[in-house]
Length: 411
Image 1 (cartoon, rainbow, N blue to C red):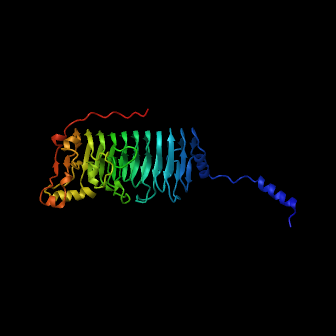
Image 2 (cartoon, rainbow, N blue to C red):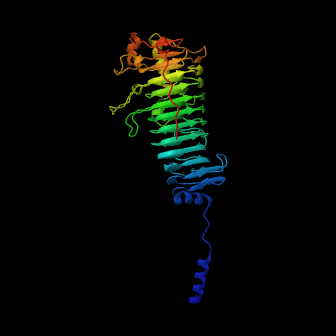
Image 3 (cartoon, rainbow, N blue to C red):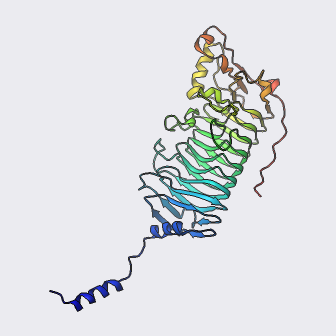
């Protein structure tokens, strides 16, 4: 039986033992937990494993790694959640990678003056519906800059900006996502010098109903991008709106206003180089009476479109078959597709102000098709009451100009 002095000596020895050292991953997590306004979180070189989300809510914080190929945050052990959740003003994320998050890679909400640069977000293995929805996901923010990032494998959008004002998206590379880049229900966005390839759809500008912050998106410029070979089969989970995007779509504008698309290289898309559509074409309900379901004031000029529409997918493939029944035989879908839906909201398509001018098109595909989907249907096609119109050149009523949109200023 130990004497009291012996027990006291044992206790003193245990007290004197150093605390177990934190692992490098625990040290990083502690930096996130302890961050306050003005903190700088330094991520060292190496690969670090996490089983839960890293969260931060503070202002003026910088999170900086040693490089997107040198600092890797792996969330492969997660059961749920995003890689990083953040909110606040003047946040900067740069020079690290996020891999295999269960949900989104980096989600930033209710932010102002956000910078995300030189990040990589990826999911291991072949692309699949169980991958996280979004790589980079700022939402409900003001003044954001996303530059020189690389995103692959998102089952919704690789680089997504939603319900946000004043946006610059430049020099990013988006590969093998459902949507490479998506601007949704946002105001004033410049999307330029990006490389969008091998996605289902290259660049999307959507305005969806029943969203709380910004009802109708407007003011996006898409220019100087290389948008090519976006023919990956659509792997979005069932029910997602991007699940309607045909594989092989270069650019798709859905119900957005004041959009200018110019000086882009758009090539090698099996369905269409550019699709312009209203929300009515989705046949989904609209509950918000203030929502504007048609795309208006769209100026498409000075683009180079090549090798489009050679093997249409999804809804476009179905419509191509229907048009054949209606007497319009298209070997290829034309470069620019418009749904032609008025829905009683406009007397003619000219009211929507779609202007197409000075684009360079190859000779294999026609220039334009007005689908006139209001009159589509099997019986209408059979009795030639549906009259879609495809033209070799842009019709004269669309050969017009609109005032150029102003550049986005973040400061």
